[in-house]
Image (cartoon, rainbow, N blue to C red):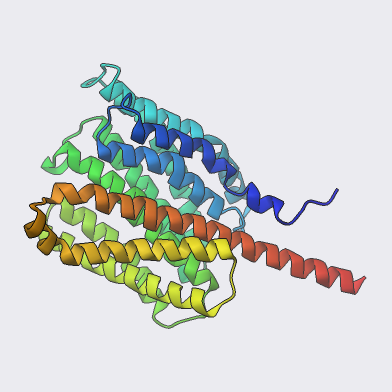
Length: 331
């Protein structure tokens, strides 16, 4: 029996639903007494990474990558559960100050290592293609995020930095550092060739490293990294919105990608008016962190990933339909 073309679209996000349910419970149940930064790390493990894996499923892969991709699909949820157990053992089960939270975090570290190796192989076989290098770099940054999470769970004082900085660095590499290169790489795959695009990719790879270095050693370097990174996202969103306006694309893809861009510009507007709002309503930066985090993680990142998953799936369906028509006319 032939499968309806709409059927794959309905089941497209099914692999993410269990992790999505778990994330909702973690954020809203009082049972999970976690810090906000820990909740965002778990959200990345249960929702963001599965969406990234979905985004990679139509990639041209060699034999080694196909094996790694199958392993990533099967090991993601167990690794995410180990991440949850690691945080629970530290916050709820009374193992704080022991090696157990750190040992449990090694599951996620090894999984992100697998993502990183897949990313490195993508870079190696890219043969200089900037879009593939960007996606590969994003996957490698997940591994760096995994390292920071393990250091946080082991409570290691690295470079005389507070362990909370390790958690913030982990969130930084699981979201901005990893996701923005993947977004820019996905855009590079479908856009017309532009001379400026390789420079955007280069800045996008260097920016997160400057931010991470600055968070620990030098605030001015961090500010430079943030400025470069933010400018890159402006370029990405501006070009993407223009592309969405000029091309007849899948409605779901266009809707979610548009929402993603809107969330980013909302963050920009709030940042511009932050000094005024701070004076008018006696607000502090702590009041704004949940707003920034929600807009970035649930708006820009989540909607962007869902949009790109639908976009890639739509492109693949059109390609298959075209091939089927060609085969039909050649018979």
